[in-house]
Every structure is written in C-alpha cells, then in structure tokens.
Image (cartoon, rainbow, N blue to C red; front, top):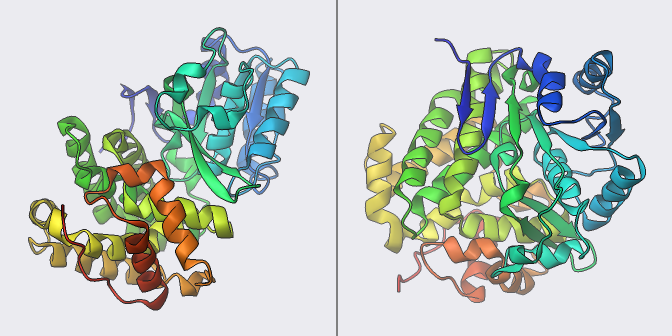
Length: 392
C-alpha cells in the first residue's frame, strides 16, 4: 500500500515517509526566510532535530531554535518563546516535536502578534474574539509522535504554573498552515512513549465518538481513527521500525485531533486536571483513565458503544469495548491505576472541583458533578471500575 499523499483536511497535510526533506520548501511556500524552530528540551539535541535545522540552513533559511519547553508547556515558557521570536526578527515558526513542542510552538506563533496575556484566550465562551488577527505568524508543524495530533488542531494546552491548572488556548488561526507528517521521524520513539501517545490518540477519537453533539463527519473519522489504533498500536510498540504501523498511527493521531472538533469529555477533564496538579504525562493519564470514565458513562453510551464495538470487530457491547481497552493496555504495558503513576489521593476533592471547570467536561455524555469526578478519580487510584452514573 502506498502510504503517502497530500491532503487538505482540516489543513494542508503532506504525509509520507521521507517528506521531512520538503521542510525548507514548505517554509518558503509560506513566505518564511527566517523561521524559528520550536521544540522541547529533550528533543533539541536529537539527530532528527539537528538534521532539520541543518537542512533549512543549507537551503538558505536563517533558522533559529527555541527549546525551553517542558513536557507540559507553561505560560512562562510561551512568554519566553514569544520574546525570543520578536527579539530575533523571525518571520515564521516550525513546530517540531510531540504534543508539548507543537502546542508551545503554536502558542508562541499566535502570541507573537497579540497584546493581551495568553490566559485571555482560554477556550471559554467567545474569548477567541479578543485576538488580533492581522499579520499572524505562519506555522509549519512537524510531528515526531503519534498522539495529540496537535499539528492539525486549533488549540494548545498550556499550564498556568501559578494556579497549577491547564488552560486550553484556542483560536481558529492557530491551525498550522502545513502539517509535514513523516512517519520515519517517529521510528525512534521508545516503546513506552509509543504506547502512551497511541492511547492518547485513541482517547481523542473515543471521546469525540461519544460526545453528545451533532457532527456526523467527525464521528465517522473517530471510528476510523480507533480502527487504525486497534490494528496498529501494538505492532508499533513491539516493532518500532515498522513504517507501515508507524504511518497508520500517525494518521490515527491526526484523525483523533480532527474528530474532537465534536468534543472531548471526562477523560480529558481529569487528565488536564491531574497534569496541571502533578505534571504527569498527558497521554498516559488518558490511557489509565479510559476504562473508568467509560464505565461511569455507561447509562448514556451503552447503545453507541455496542455500535462502535461492532465496527471494531469486538463483542458488540460496552463490556466488549472495555474488555478490549483493558487487554490492549496490558499488551502494550500501560498500568491499570493512577497510583502506579505516582499520583497521590490527597487532593481528591480538589481534583473533582477542577475537573468540572475544564472546558472538556462540557463534552462528556453525562454532566458529571465534582463529587462524581472525585469518585472516578478515586476508583482509578484503586483500580476499581466505578458504578454507572445516572443519565439525565
């Protein structure tokens, strides 16, 4: 199968092995002469990053690097990146890396032309209308993991380190102009990161599928995203050099990020909360939380879950879907409890309170209360599936 193509959904996607060679051309297409490559601190010294910068320079682009970005990028890091962009006279951004690097890069490019603090653009109500939209900075996104799909998304998740909470920063123009998607860049990922990011992609499609909003196109994309994960994640974890599995997982990641225009839900409301409080890996949190949130939502999703399970070739029921999730997690080394990740239970009430405030909570099939989020959290700590919540 020829796993290569040019797509325009939802943005321009140049997909296929070896396409990183087109990076300089993509930058020039968007009018860049002096791009700033933004990545996370762990990837900055990696061979693939150095090769990307060298290729840009060899093509005559004056490419700089900003890499003061952590696994959960913060407002302070975005402010520093924005200052570096302005001070360096850059004219575009290359968002290079996993979800943290790409989210930070998109936020830096967006904030480079704003005169308000980043918190003013949190995805609440019509905050996005506050933004200046003139002379915005173009972005070429180059994903190196298959999880968040941020390269085809219109938002960035940024941590407010003072409040210890994550904010979803949203604006339609945050969508990168080009996503240069080369699965060869993901072949060096360790098995554990492959597993966690792959489950993150699954969580995006799954929550989008169950979200209580009308968006049939997104729902269909979600089903295909989950099928791609089912058929390829275990292979990608066990055989990291399998370019076919890596290609399908990169596509699954982008499918999930496209589908969640329909909404997210309780998995992300809790994962964002726990990531802000404990600086834990977002994909791993979603991976662990998944069966607990599915179980709590049973009374609202049972029929849709039966349809989905049937589409995936599973026993056509919510129990069949949960059994597959549990088996997949065991196969790829995902722990069963939040306690296994070192998450303590001492702020359970606070977790429930913050989860209900997260914008993702609005997409849960049942409008959960803080106490119900607290119960799900405590069950995920202990490894016991919660009782179903009564549907409204």
